[in-house]
Every structure is written in structure tokens, then in C-alpha cells.
Length: 267
Image (cartoon, rainbow, N blue to C red; front, side):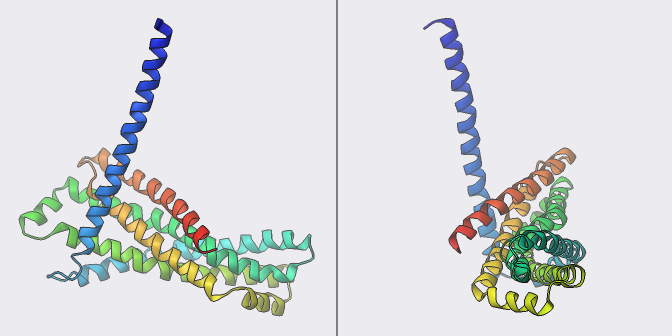
């Protein structure tokens, strides 16, 4: 083999080697995250019970996200009304505007956009907070005091995101459909009776259940990813910043991937 062939062989070997190591590293981190979250959740019923910390995290995650969820839901509903009206008007089906807005928000946009907003607002804060605990050695201090940091830090946050996100998405859906009604009926002149009637006729229990299942799944995913990355963050200021960025990116990508899987399953 000539020198050019040797060079390309080495280059391809190095490239595939890096890809293989990256893939194995990703599998290892997925296993570590599953183990960490599983062992943390198994401590839910173990004394001392962390009910107070769970309530605190529910308040921090839920109440702190109300404004951004409400604003996102309102403008999503208004944009859907505008775009949907001018699309349906081409086919003479303006009366279907209410059903289109409701189905789009309940099945897809509500869970996905709500989860994205929770990731940006609360998920990043969870990762940064746990990472700072690692930098300031608060986690080590808990262990020195015989307090399990997984029960005190990780478990309450995973439970909080899992419980709160469905409630936030329910609020997102209501505000979004209300904003769509205002724009569609009051501004664009759609018949209010047709708007409500088609919404009631087309939205089924299956659609609502699909949205709820997505909300619970996304909330659990956000809690697992953000707590794991924060807990395993490099104990430096740069490490905390990098961990926060990774948590937002990985959570957002994970939400989109999981959304596709659940959508294909519940069609």
C-alpha cells in the first residue's frame, strides 16, 4: 500500500474510532443517568421523608414558570388562529378553525412548547443550582452529615418536574385556545357557535390523554436529564456553565425525539 493509501486508512480509522468512543461514552452516560435517577426515586418512601423539599421544588418549578407558560400559550393560540384562518379560508373551511387550534395545541404544541419553556426556565436553574452545590462542596457536606444527597437533592426535583409540567401544560392549552378564540371570533369574524361546536366535536378523550401522557413523560425526562448533568458537573465555574448548556440542549433534543416516538405510538 502506498503512502496515500496508508494516510487515508489511518484517517478513516481515527474517525471511526472517535465515533465509536463517543457512542460508547453516550451509552455509558445513559446507563449512569438511569441508575442515578432510579436509585434516587427508590428513596421516596425511605425515612426521613422529603415531603417538605418536594413541596418547595414544586413551588419553585411551577409558580416560577406560570408567566412564561401563560405568555407562550397566549401567543401560540393567536398565531395559530391567524395562520389557520388564512389557510382554511382557501378551502372555505373557516368553521374548522376551532378544531384545528384545539387539536394542534392539545396534541402537539402545548406539550412540546410547554416542556421547552420549562427546560429553559426551570431545567437550567436546576442544573446550575446542583452544579453550584458541587462546586461549593455542599453535596460533600450532606454526605458528611449522613444525609443522602440523592434523596435530598435529586429525587424532589424529578418528582416536581413530573407533577408540575402536566398542570402547566393544561394552563397552556386553556390560555392558547382562549387566545385563539379571541383572535378567530373577535378579530377575524369566525362564527362563535361553529368555532366551539367543531372544537367539541373533533377533540376526543384520546387526544386529551395523548397530551397528558406526553406532559408526564416530558416532565420526567427534564427532571432526569437536568439533575443528572448538574450532579455530575465538573466542580468549576466553567464546568457549571457547560453543564447548564448541555442540560438545555439535551433536554430539548430529548423532548423532540420522545415527542416523535409518542406521536407515532398514539396515532
